[in-house]
Length: 423
Picture (tube, rainbow, N blue to C red):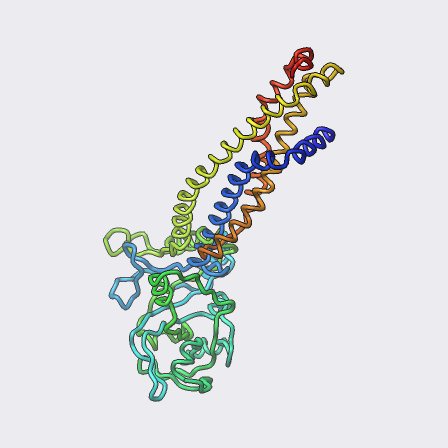
């Protein structure tokens, strides 16, 4: 085998231009497939990050009616929907694929928040428990987090994000300052910012609006025990679930959703209003739908690129037939000296396999270069796929074996006498 490989390289380098032109179809096909697969993988990762976030693995479970998230302020009858207590929270944390759980209230209010003569509208108000900030990767940049006495003593304190601090206080230290929220005074005890804040890739104006509609107006967080001072409603909680991985987000959200819905009295299922139930956000379903669309489109491109591999294989067969013709006397001499059909067959199959494998390796290098070129020119994300590289090299070797088989059989079946007489 080693001797056959050595002879194969000797033959390839003895006819460099011919060998290169023979490998060109293989190189182009492999390069195209590597570039396409890398682009698919990179695009799918971008889709996942843009919709899911940068590794936070968070998914919301909210009350929902007929596909629309609801709140008590909308006048929906929520009688019988249980208020989540500490025992229920601990049970949710022990569900499959769930790493942590926090409960919270949320309201997107157009009512202005005031600090002295400054005001701010469109703020998102959140009434949260003590673990909400940690699960959402909030870091305290000034002041402190909530403490147990804030909850036990129903204190009117709040924590604001960086956007709110900049808008209302304009460089002034906000700690221990008083905000007016729904006519109630709330003392600012902390300022937070999200750790490793994720900025999605934005390519269109629609994507810009989609992103900037989600939270850039600012957030104000208060203890959940003080929520009634803001909303005047005794309402069920929403839940934010931290999954143990991005891949298990949907499963974790589903487990919490089913747990909470099992607590809703069955008698509520007898009328239209009883369609109110907890429902997890469908972020991962959106990710999968977009990824499936991307994969379907690009798989067609892969099939088109594969045609060049077939063309390359035909080129290999053609050049191997020429090689057999050119080396007829050599084959006849080997067989006259005792070489068996299997030895001659193995030599030519090895030569075809080495030729296409070398083309496959060059194609992988060209494909990686092409992928990064496309990324720089078209601003398309790229993630090099190692399995695609391995499969491509193995596949190119198989092409050599398949398309080199007929010429190899022809060489092995040559009659020694006729081969030696060949001019």
